[in-house]
Length: 404
Image (tube, rainbow, N blue to C red; front, side, top):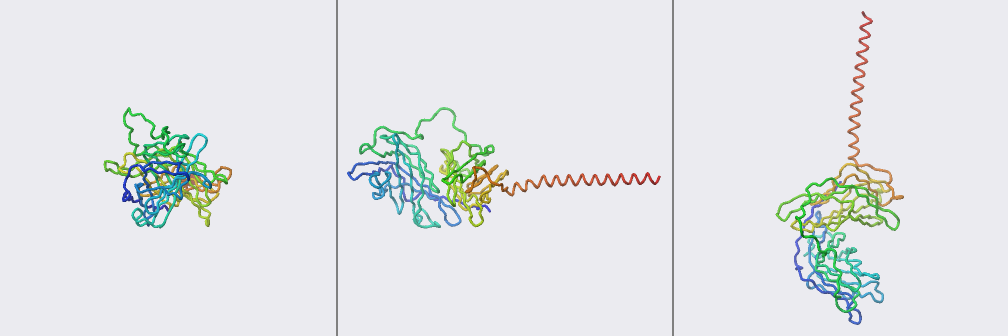
């Protein structure tokens, strides 16, 4: 049974929008090794009983470097780290790494406090929770990373947006370098020509994409399917629309393999769709249990769209077998999102030799097979009736001749 969980949005409050803040990490001699200046917002989806709510907060002016968790990477610390604390139990942490030519923010972590009723009213869970993700923030050695545009980092149920960012690690001096590496978002784009049209309400059916997620013990997810997003949102002119967006084979994907959870993340510059497959060890069944979507909708009142549901039970089959369905399936994620799946074959957790196992077909395909069977049976019955009628008529004719 598919679960339908509505999503409510909570407006930003309390933590006011602020100008970029400056953060520094210094070594024991007082020499700066990391400097960062940026504004940030945090969009967090959380469970509040029978609904999912969205909390939106911004990095406040009171945020400061947490010294005992920040480091230049000397002694026992394996990598330079900038840790920023704010509010009641919030922590943003960036870890850096480098090679001979470039440095990067290798990982970003965010800890938030579900016990903070100002931002998480009626939260089902309490206490701190931490999410993390890799990033695309990178620059040439001895150059400052500069990005005026939005930098979006998508985590499990959190979207972090940085803007007006100036970041540099492994500083050659105690200040930002004059030379810069600009982010791709800031690169100039053509301004001539007509504006881009809005996406069609109903595009053509999506093309089939193939996915293979591999972990330390081999392939844990094999999938061939066409995906389409049906999103309902309010436009800037206060009209509500439902638009369909196809997931394209050219979209990049990644994933993770775990003993109880397998993930597939598919995205491009404007959206990231994550599918989570769980397993019931008792019944030895795998199934799609979670869907999360983070997306930018330029014509929406709230351009940052985020919704999720982690209590689904779709695309189910026995572990070691593959689930297959040629019919179109509609998975209702929330009142704002439905995931349409076409021509799907998927197998999670145990995949042998990178090949699909025995097929378990969906109910819809079984019902579709009943139609030609029923039609064939009806035709066969009709032929049989005609044949019997013909034989009876012929027998009567022969009987009449014998009487004469």
